[in-house]
Image (cartoon, rainbow, N blue to C red; front, side, top):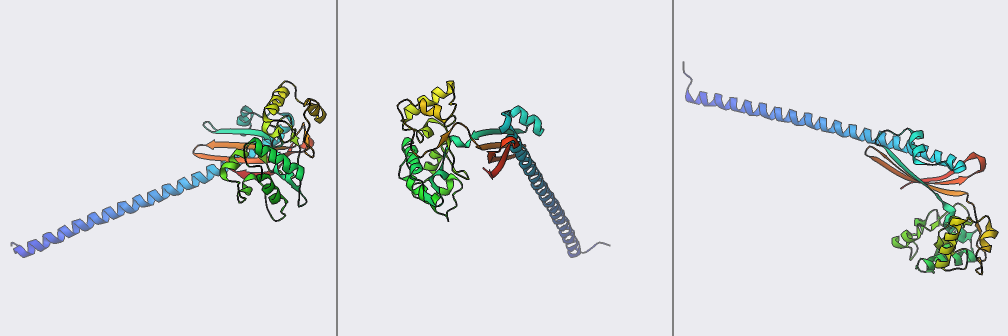
Length: 280
């Protein structure tokens, strides 16, 4: 018995709706599965990145520990770092140890809440040598003398007038803020910093740097003697050895990259003490 045309049309319509519904359900299921899979992949990537970052931090701390020990015997080097830390193929670690006392220590500008006028004048000389405003020395000294100011690094001077980002970048290779006043190491200080120690021009300071490459200064008296007719500046301490060092470390571990700066203080036969560590 044949179905009436209207019945056949309704049946076809129902089949069409069923097909469309089935397709929509399939698409929805595929979308949900794809979304769940994508979310799972994202979570796995986040966990992997966290593990890599943790491993990189651990390796950085290991590298700093090696630098502490190497300050005693001078055996630091990339080959030792790679072998001692067991870096995986493709991973890399770069490390540089710098003499912090080769720079002018801004902590010298004040002590016990009082500005050190001799050191302020010395810093003004450095600013002039770098063709920066010498008046910045007075502002920095006042900030260091303020007991309420927390000046632990050069960038903490940013709120002071004149200490713009460009000025701070120009100063960065030549100044440091250490936990206490220190002497300038004349065996490692660049010519610009030597102008804060001796009454000489930048060109004359460069001659002093060239001379010490041939024969490092044995002691403070040897440095003063080799100045010839130039005098050392009053109230500015200098030496031929250092206790404070900066360790710059950078590690690459797959797609994780970390960099840090550590401040170490040499302490006799025990190597060196880690005073501060910050990410870069």
